[in-house]
Length: 242
Image 1 (spheres, rainbow, N blue to C red):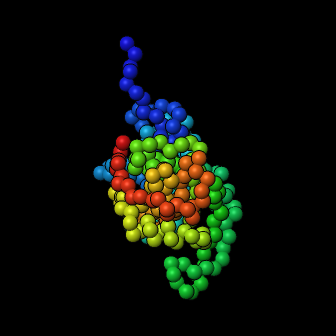
Image 2: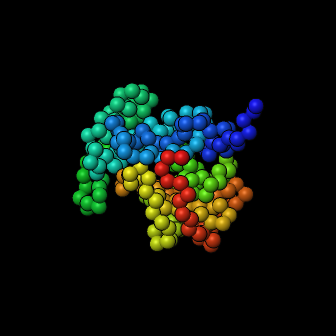
Image 3: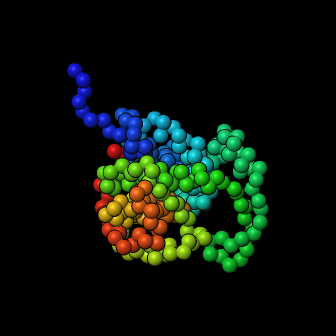
């Protein structure tokens, strides 16, 4: 007898069946150094093996970016450093990128008006954006129960330098959207989703690394500036493991 139970689709591609019992950790679990706490329900979404595997290389760079930008402010600073060192040691591609092209200079850090020695490390912007886009896709499904169309455009925006018009969207997000905490509060996000599926996201890692994203369906060719006409707040449908 054939199993008539409908299969859960991968929420990242919307085409292949999700792998039972597994799934994709969003945000990537690798940003948490080992040993990881056993009392946290790590956030996961249903995903197929190809989608899960496709993001592994991008996740390794994302781990470096999050670790470097937040590590000094976290209680687990030493494990973060050890994890970053292990990644660089075991990944020659990233090692060449980080150690072969970094630049020394001076800049202002943490609001300090005095110039301090800093190191600029080049990263692959496309890889960073792909991880953020994957997170948004997973969270969109968790929020709405709908798989974001594979051709939907997801525009990733970092707060510095500030893009024109972004400030108004951030103010609206902060004033009217509920705060959702995942992975023991180490990852926080806020979102507005409009009635046509357009959404604006604010994602924060370890209270320090902040990134924004606009996501809109393929048939909607509007620009981010037009988002606030019909944005509505939605409550999280799923928090924690799926």
